[in-house]
Image 1 (tube, rainbow, N blue to C red):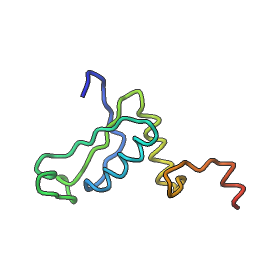
Image 2: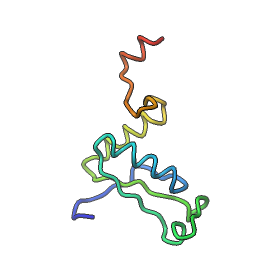
Image 3: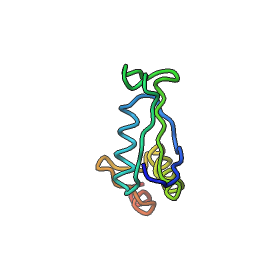
Image 4: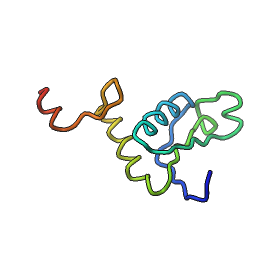
Length: 93
């Protein structure tokens, strides 16, 4: 990492979920670092404290990163990973 400050924007269980969210954030142009307890990563643990993975982004991108994750959790992305705009949603209703 550089001298830049990093901020935890989410914590998830398991490396697979964390990698999926990393891909989503990086597709939106946000740099991501995943942080997990060494033993949890070495043994592939995905439950409990050792299975927790922190999703970290540069502080200047934290607000945008949280918004992307919020939109993802609300189902606002298409299968291709594109964000569905509000006006497109109303046309489909």
